[in-house]
Length: 187
Image (tube, rainbow, N blue to C red; front, side, top):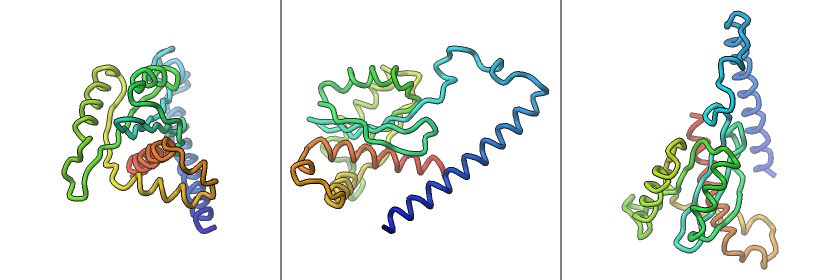
């Protein structure tokens, strides 16, 4: 109950903040001297659309994906894919969702040293930068996201059979990574 109240409170704050930014934007447009704002933006430009942010919780077998809304406020679990199929899936998502940014969870140990999979994540990041040069690629510390995802699943009230889906933890971990990233962008 407290979490619902807290979420509702934060949702209202985010909504009010967005209204404030819209008002500032409209004031800036009024200062254009009657020019049509759409005439200032090139038509059919990939960079001019409001893109979304995708997060990746990479694993050697499975990879969890999450995506933001258009305003980059909320994170939503998207799916879990086999890691072998990740690049094919990302090529599709970059075009269909008009991704502006991709965030990769960077696995670290408690002492901030690299884990056994960190080098694979760095190689993935480099591959993404080469494959999608117009998309910003960022990384974020993903320590404890799997533990938090397991706790969320346990508290969700799902049936035991549904909780045992192996890909569910990866998808929720990607959602946690993305929500953390979105919150750090707002600061």
